[in-house]
Amino acid sequence: MQHHHSVDASGVFSGPVGADLRAKLASDENVLAALQVDLSADLRFVSGWVVVTSRRLLACDPGATVWRDWALAPGLALKLQDHGGVGTLELHNPQERVAFWRFTLGHHPQALRLVQRFEQQVERGAGQAATEEEEPACPACHTPLPPDTDECPACARAQAGHS
Picture 1 (tube, rainbow, N blue to C red):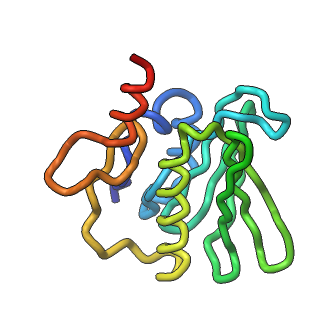
Picture 2: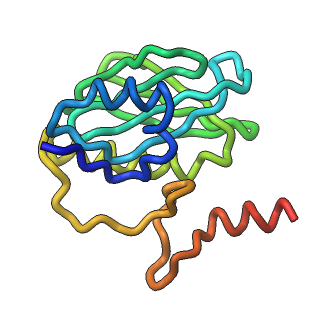
Picture 3: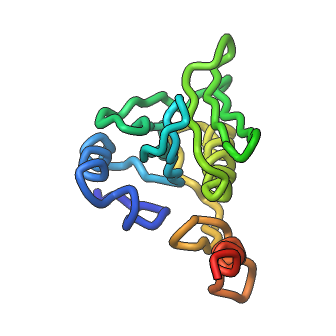
């Protein structure tokens, strides 16, 4: 069975990190959302990834080459917050925080989508494929696109801010 990747594969699936991720996926496991994190725990600019699949949350921490993973299960929660221009995504089990990742706020739309997909998958039960129609998303930042447009408002705002 072929992998069906719901997110744009040009980012996370290219290069050695993407090859490592593809090797970790089961034949029937689909990537539902991906977040590129760009800050280490000590706030240095280093790239890493957090990925939600149909079964697990996987992470390659900033500056690392090894993927960690957690099976999606009831009681597992992702919490998103920002403070002083730094976003933080925390993974909690019922007892404690088990992992966290930091990112600049330019990645916040991706983080929101990742949390949404994570919550949907935990709610429906890990291992079951998404049944609702996929909403169109920006290939660059994965923000859901408004109806009847191919232009991403988040990317358009960012582009306008750079000119």
